[in-house]
Image 1 (cartoon, one colour):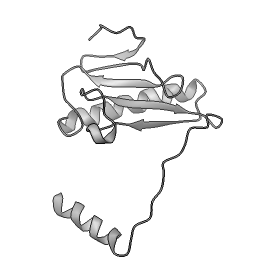
Image 2 (tube, one colour; image 1 turned 45 degrees about the vertical axis):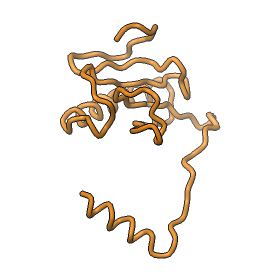
Image 3 (cartoon, one colour; image 1 turned 30 degrees about the vertical axis):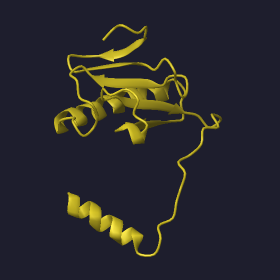
Image 4 (spheres, helix red, strand yellow; image 1 turned 60 degrees about the vertical axis):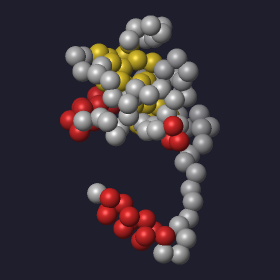
Length: 124
């Protein structure tokens, strides 16, 4: 840590939060655990909960600076867009005028909604 120039937003003994140097929007913040975990699948449950707690705190602060909302997300695995293989959570400020696209939407085929739910339930 500390080899790429950054602006620290928050730090404690568990996590570090800093501004993304290639932001989606101004104020885009990353939260990383100080201990190495590759992604959400490796992250202990208590750490995941802690990161969400910090994300909530930072999101509220970003909103106070003028953002009209935030997106809190984590890409997990190469095919989900993860390019840095150290767990990190994005907080992306959103503005009415930012013209960023919303999530694309698809439709389930006949019986696919139920089949998909059953597969996920079985895997739990």
